[in-house]
Image 1 (spheres, rainbow, N blue to C red):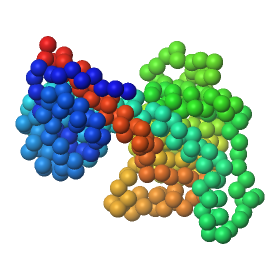
Image 2 (cartoon, rainbow, N blue to C red):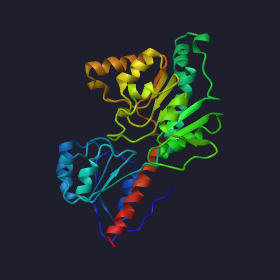
Image 3 (cartoon, rainbow, N blue to C red):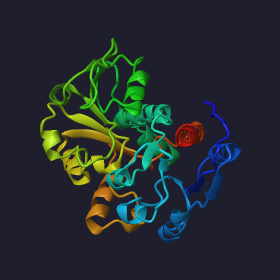
Image 4 (cartoon, rainbow, N blue to C red):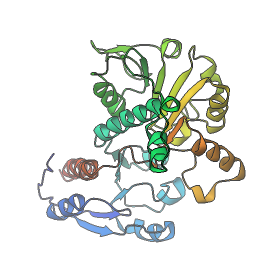
Length: 324
């Protein structure tokens, strides 16, 4: 994917407050814009810079809440170098006339592959068996896996990543059910569009690929699990707060959840876990039927470049429109 380098007639001052691929900075400069690159800047430092810029690129280093945005008197565009927009107060931004965009399509393949990798690890005890062999332990029966073929996989959220997961499952001989509250008529010969109740009734495996909103906060909880008719494997590669950790742990203890693969956690700052959070985290990290990775599902060499390229193109299109 290439950027569209049309030199702007008006230079825009752009703050980049997190590390990004050089493609973005080089492209902005080539188009005639001014880049203020301050990766790792503190909230206070960012607050001091915002009044003097017209655009802001960030990842997750800081919450772009209303208090911070009110200092951004001249900002017209905010770009999230990643998928979600959940660390940006969209209501405040809208009231201020700020356009907010992300690079949601950039890491779909990465997340799709990571989902498949976690699923295979989970169902075949690959992580557990690997660590045992490294320690000189050779156990076969204890690591007898479960095949994907013939299983029903339910995908909740059929946007960029959910659809990528479905595409990568096409050769495994599985039935794919997909539910998306905000999309219709996306089914195909390989994907059956369905309602949430049908998915909960039929799925052996449920994978979450939804943005974090007030509506999806704790989407997976005890009530959700009660509606599942089978023992299920649960995967979450969206946002940690989609899954209520305490209810997931109770589901694992009861056996209603056969296993879980999580690339995200409710609190990913492990050094600041509260006592109750630590109890649940310790259970997850010590459970043989749980696979954890540190929010790297979309974090590949390829997606790193694609995120900056897509965001650059979106900014250049925006800047061309405001310069007309």
